[in-house]
Length: 162
Image (cartoon, rainbow, N blue to C red; front, side, top):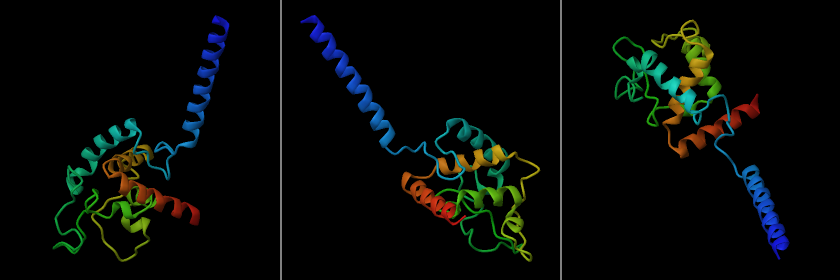
């Protein structure tokens, strides 16, 4: 009787382990990143939040709210104000690689705009690639699941076109 109980217990334990492994393998995970950003990586998000506050918040706002309410119209200097990076802005309308390039190279160089002036500096000599990815990961981590899912779908589409 004890042998049967041990065998049954062992068989149930093995079945539970196999079921858990299969479930883990089949269920989609937010850890499966799409693009280069890591919004679910707490280390990157923490670094990104610090770097954002040090290097970006003075223009884009401490709470990602942007420079001015009407960020879609040029300022008195003729340049576009810094847009918000929260969901009211357009950051999530661009794939990861485009956001990375704009941050690293600046808008003018990244978009190859010859006759365009922008107050957005290039950060290639200021921040490392890891810091840029961390900042963008922090920004994305603040978006709703719905917005993040739409952004992930855009990244998939962008990657498919490469």
